[in-house]
Image 1: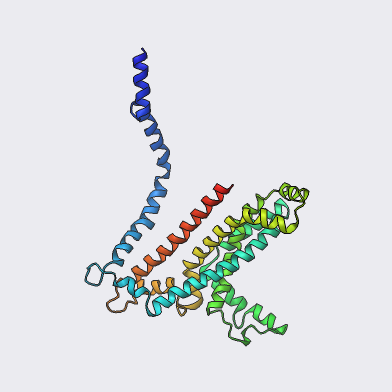
Image 2: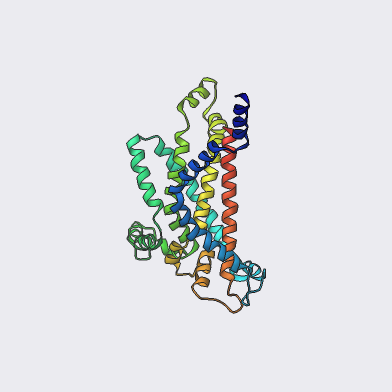
Length: 302
């Protein structure tokens, strides 16, 4: 009897036997409802990405080459890479700072107000493309309603070099969905700050500056940084809004990739668009890797 029990115990320890097989089957069945999701991701993300990476290393004759990646950092393509990163950094910084300030004010309101604002922010954060471009043209265009109202008050937006079709205008348009996205993601981190911590700091003789530097900043900075990285990735990969606003006149990587994929291919650069897409994927992977590391660091600190 003891020998039989020992054998069954050993079979469980080594991962064999009918009980272990039943557990494996049960775990497999629990994944079946996720099969449509995995199929969707594979068909619309993994398969296209595989072909893009393959074609990025091929020349017009189908031979292996690195020349496509060399062209990505030369001339107008290298300039578009720099402009895209610069515009993404600026829009992410504006969205992060403005969104954090708005979120800190929203957290102090009532529960119903927070829910209403969160619902509004979720709608605004997902607004983009042609509808967003039309909205800004109707409001801030040269003959827009807001432009005329400001001009009536004595401020002419177009008196200087400002235009919606420049990098400055794109940053303004991007801020429309970057700020609500920051409010939506950053608010839960602010809600985790307990009022008791402020009371404990006051009882120990701490000032507002001490509480802010030693409690608030260490607690909220990882969430602020990780959300800022998401804003950067969001603006770096945006295509529809910039395309609708500038018609491809602004040198941005997504727009140039779209032109190359649509058939505007220069001689001997048939796969240049694929190489630029791989470069964008590489930047996104780096940003998201830093995002994951920040989240892990914040969990360890807690």
